Every structure is written in structure tokens, then in C-alpha cells.
Amino acid sequence: MHHLAYIALGANLGDRNQYLAFARDALSALTGSRVLAESSVEETAPVGGVPQGAFLNQMVALETELSPHELLAQLQRIENEAGRERTIHWGPRTLDLDIVRYDDIYVDEPDLVIPHPQLANRDWWQRELAELGAKE
Image (cartoon, rainbow, N blue to C red; front, side):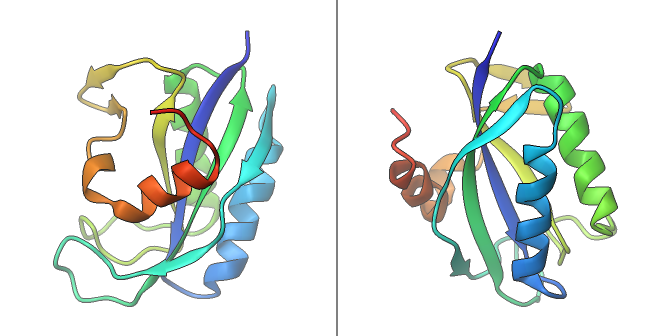
């Protein structure tokens, strides 16, 4: 069964454009998945209060056969392959991948919350979802 997930991509270390391209390629290569559409890339200020450089952000619409938990595991694998280090919460990172929405389901578990709990606070995500034609 195919599902529609919206994945947020962000990077603020190194060659930010290259990390976003790496993520798009890696998402396209996931078993039973394909990127249907990509939003524009936009630069945003970091959130969370940790001093750091600006982010490049983008949203992709991903058709996938992966369950939400399988998809989360794959996103974390891709982040690790991009050299992401989890040392400071909301700190700088080579690549950040978040499941923003997955079909119309709601998940509220310790390791996964869908829709993403920060969706209402990130106006760029809302713009990117609208650009991709996501329904409210």
C-alpha cells in the first residue's frame, strides 16, 4: 500500500545545498518509495536559541510503502550517513530530516509524533506544504 509522507529537509553546516541534494537522492532510493514533488529551497533563521548559522530548508512529498516507524529509521540512517552528530538539542547539523505529515494519521509516541509537533510554529513548513499542494 502506498502512503504519502511530507518530509522536511534542513541543513546548516558545510555545503548545505549538497546535503539537501544528498537527502533527496537518498529518499528517492528508499525501497518502495519515490519523491513525487519538491518545494523551493529557502533560507531560514535557526530556532531553539542555540547560536548557529542559517538553515537551508526544503519539503518533499514522498510516496512510500514504508510504515511511519520504518520511515523514521531510514531518515535517521540517512542523517547519519550525512555525518549528523546529535550532541546539542536543536544545535547545528549537516542534515535534519523530519516526518511532518504521513497520510492523515496521528501518532503520539515517545519516539514519533505525527503530524510533527512543531508544524504550527514553523511558517516555512506551512509555505512549503502549500507549495506542494498539501491539503489541510
